[in-house]
Length: 215
Ligand SMILES: NC(=O)c1ccc[n+]([C@@H]2O[C@H](COP(=O)([O-])OP(=O)(O)OC[C@H]3O[C@@H](n4cnc5c(N)ncnc54)[C@H](OP(=O)(O)O)[C@@H]3O)[C@@H](O)[C@H]2O)c1
Image 1 (cartoon, rainbow, N blue to C red):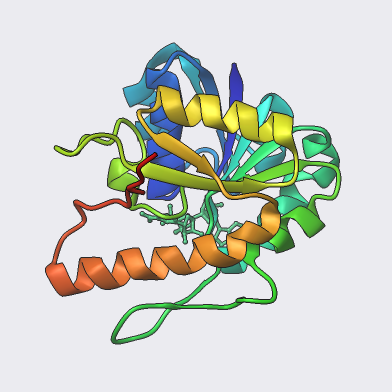
Image 2 (cartoon, rainbow, N blue to C red):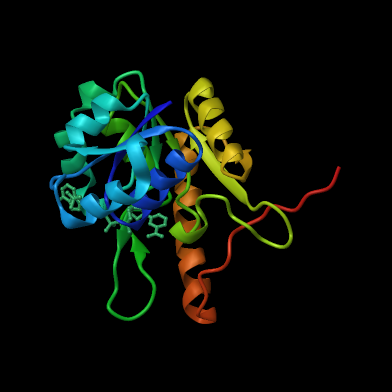
């Protein structure tokens, strides 16, 4: 599959490398496609790796990953061109964070709205699925925990798109739980804050959520 990745931070590069590791072709999009960071990423990821503008990556991807700083997300999507994402699955890994000097970040949107819903409004023709936002980038691909695969919760309005994202997540080693429409992002985005608070209190990035259940 051809995957476009909008975002060159840790999340964008980790997911891009993960898709390549799992047999896909990836183009990462950026305002600076020739940056040293992207040259290094491309050199380390072989012939399936390419870089381009946000619009190049959006056009390239059959599936497109959104991994941008929240405050730059609308601009990045404008540069990507909503028309280039029409009818496509867009995996929204962002969190609408407001950073604090001391202590954990908070959310710019909450309870009655969410980043996921805002992204879907910015991309009315795309099938947005919230995923990957509840874990640190270190464990997004092939998470290995002694008690088995952690749970990735996903939310989105399009059933087929969620099927595609579920297949991707399972191939990456996740157990998947579909929590419903894109408004589910209202509860998934606060889970990022819980992940960060735990990280700060325990000086750890080696954790992920798992849903326990019985018949
Ligand atoms: N870090 C994690 O472990 C983690 C885990 C879960 C979710 N998330 C979420 O995933 C997203 C990406 O996080 P990250 O830490 O990988 O990277 P980041 O530093 O939050 O974002 C980097 C990307 O944002 C783009 N960007 C920033 N300002 C922009 C603007 N004004 N216009 C257009 N693009 C702009 C940059 O574009 P250029 O390439 O053009 O500079 C770059 O590609 C965030 O929303 C974050 O909250 C992060």
